[in-house]
Image 1 (tube, rainbow, N blue to C red):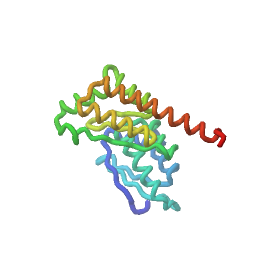
Image 2 (image 1 turned 180 degrees about the vertical axis):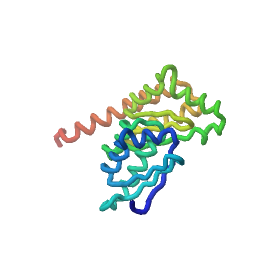
Image 3 (image 1 turned 45 degrees about the vertical axis):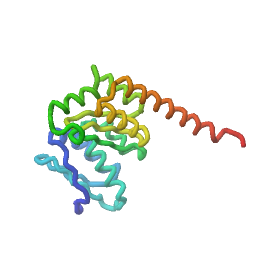
Image 4 (image 1 turned 90 degrees about the horizontal axis):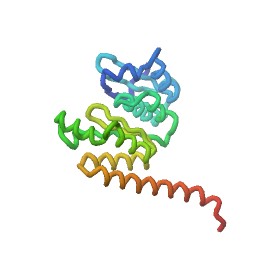
Length: 193
């Protein structure tokens, strides 16, 4: 293996998900991105380096995002979005930055974002076309940059204590705005000057 170019640490209980059955997930990341992963099961350290012949630094960053996504609770299937679509990115929000290290405060804020029976999280995902994962002290978002930013802002609104109704209004308004932009993109090539 070549010299490691990047290091990532993930929770030990997520190592199995990163490696996958018969190392299938690890090998998929390596093959699709032209990188080599060296996983230390004891510490949770993952070294990412260029595979033979690959020198594209963007692939190291894509691999890092994929490893982090799995480490922050996304299933390998959802993390695969990072391998297949260059427009998809990962945003990680650390709740400790907002509420401190109090376990009860982290659970309270996580609960607001999850909602009753997962309704709030699902609504964020549906209205922004993103994937949201709550794991430990982090909330992560997978999706296209603009949509992920809307989801991130809505999550920040919940963290700051905004009412669910006002966050829902924000999400619905942004959804309409995104649809309007997509319609305008489709209309422009067909409009006559």
